[in-house]
Length: 352
Ligand code: PMP
Figure 1 (cartoon, rainbow, N blue to C red):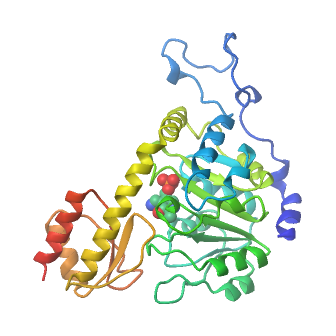
Figure 2 (figure 1 turned 180 degrees about the vertical axis):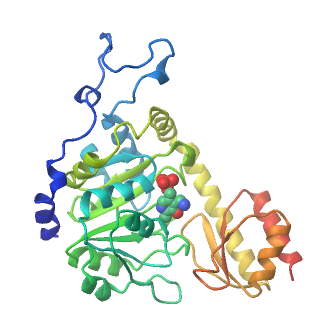
Figure 3 (figure 1 turned 180 degrees about the horizontal axis):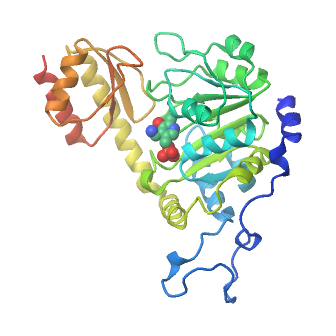
């Protein structure tokens, strides 16, 4: 972790100024006439650039998630630990651009969310695969990752497309022992029973936790990602961020959703109840070999007759993710509303 700090201190990005004119980084004054930004004065609020000062929204986000189960430690974080981005995938791109230099490698743990490796390749960074192990694909090869000595390791926990949580002792062992940065993508954390790593970013200086408002909070279209890390890392990400990328519309949607958090949290309870009902129903089904344990809003299902079942879903107009090319004979089913879920069960029965 010390070397993560010292390498950061010598990184050229530390000398790059934070983008965006300084006047956008302060809270606005309401008694000024703004003739500074070449915008259209006749077309209302959307003609004005978004504010870059998201301190209040960061505070709202932290106080909202601090109340969730398994989020101990979040109450001790401050807005300096928070960076908003245009979706959490944007945060993944920013951190690679800010923290990895040419030739430094990026480790991913397949089967996992494919965009981490994609972004690494886009940035011409070598990618090291460290496949997950165990029946539930929830075990890391910690020694293998340490031996590869990557600059950045991406973990997805709960993991997409499997749905399981990674072995907690191994994750913490890796964070403690690696010389590099560990990123934990917690896109699905609100659906999980086991503790989040969000509150840990203050104590591990090489840890970045990515969160999103796209899943539990229902704002996939508004593009609201959150990176949590110690202030020095947050600052490094901010320096490479496209100014105004976290739009006014995103900020408004996030503020509304977080200040009315009961709506989203009620829906999470319903989704979890449906997930557990679907997991039980699918596990009983003769076409299903196995339902992976899930702490997300989807289920990974291994099928006996994968091809036939996929064809039957397609014929019934049901789109599921065919994950057969990464985990043999599987598909990933998102939890829908009760009617959609029952339609899927009916289509599955028609296939036997
Ligand atoms: N991370 C994971 C693990 C995901 O599954 C997804 C959505 N498919 C994302 C990130 C995307 O999040 P966002 O919309 O915030 O970019």
